[in-house]
Length: 551
Image 1 (spheres, rainbow, N blue to C red):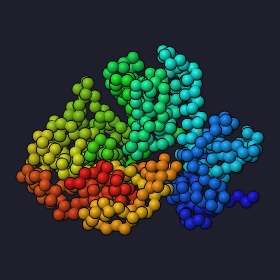
Image 2 (image 1 turned 45 degrees about the vertical axis):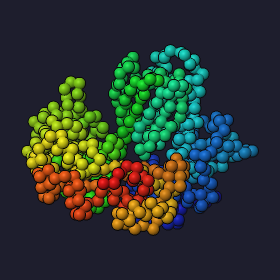
Image 3 (image 1 turned 90 degrees about the horizontal axis):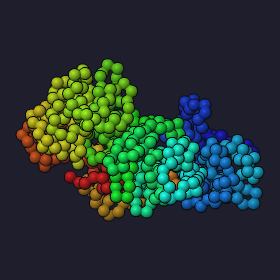
Image 4 (image 1 turned 180 degrees about the horizontal axis):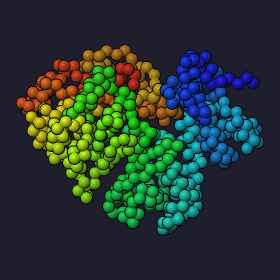
């Protein structure tokens, strides 16, 4: 059998150019597979890779999401072999073992599996994520849960070695829940105590879904283990606690913020996963339209003034601030941040953690920062008059100040600061611009298909002076967990403060007057930006309407 090389297959299928192939081959590390490098560069999607292998080599595609796997078959293949080669045994027919593989062209893996099982191997192809998830479910989580069920009586007290020994079932179970969440690109893990069970939920692309339900008697052991790795007080269960833990998951540094909260059925725990590798966003990859990006760059490149990012909790404000700081971070400038909490640690930037219990508030920290000769100051959030007042005065004395504010729109930020007590004449002199932001789910690249817009959608586009003949919808596939969405992108409204708006602020103009003026001048509101992204096939109108209310 002549072995066809993957690069040649993709070039022949016109999914890749010779130049892209040559560039990827020259830039990838020696131990990285070509398929992984092409996916990382974004030249192809995993579904395209699967379709080429399926068509060119006649290797069937396996949908693991809907596949029932026999536990006897799982026991036939050693766990380390399944993990090393990223493969999942499926079923046996006669002397053939059917196996789902991320790389069905890996002949070494097939040969080793044949020797280990004594069976002829028939490979199928599945996505890396779905194989990884299935391995975790059938090998790791199942193993840990079965051991726990056998080792612990439901009423048994917590054994200290059981939650500190790295090889104990409870430790492995917690590790696997975290690893599985990271593999699914979850932003949060929720441990929800119910009356008769413990629910484990993942927030993926901003939406919570139940991953599994555990017996009630595991609750105290699981929560005790999480407290130990987060350096929290294991004996305190009546008061909320906050902690942090740094882990390496699949060779990536992941920072996890842990919060506990007493509830009537026990302590609820939320773990926020902060992927350090994804922290340093490039400002051009945040989803800004060309005109909005130009306006935002203009704002942050001024030597002084205030730039505000507004939106509710979880709308990606911090990521946008970090991306702006990353762009401004040069050797000749002194950047200091004060945050609660410090989410990502940035090289070359001085970051301060708020500690209100010892008097280290935003306002107190900000006063000290001003004595440290800063050029650029980032304030995690403007929550009160005192912080707002110091930020305004800092900007008027030659500093560039970046911060966030919880308001529903960019225009609302103006009235919020005046309501806080900031003098209009100071605000009009100091403000450079405001960015309103939300996050919407992206349509899965692998199962998106063009359909005719519904009447309600046509009306929405007509109101925004846009006309569309088709919109994109995700059918649901294994890559996106059958949701039709994979990943998120931001939608924005950018409000640069020009002389006319300064006049409105000075004369305490009403919200409706400012809205009318910016509309006349062609400002794109969140809804408009969202609808543009719907027209481009990036998201859906349902997603945009879920996060945006019309002005």
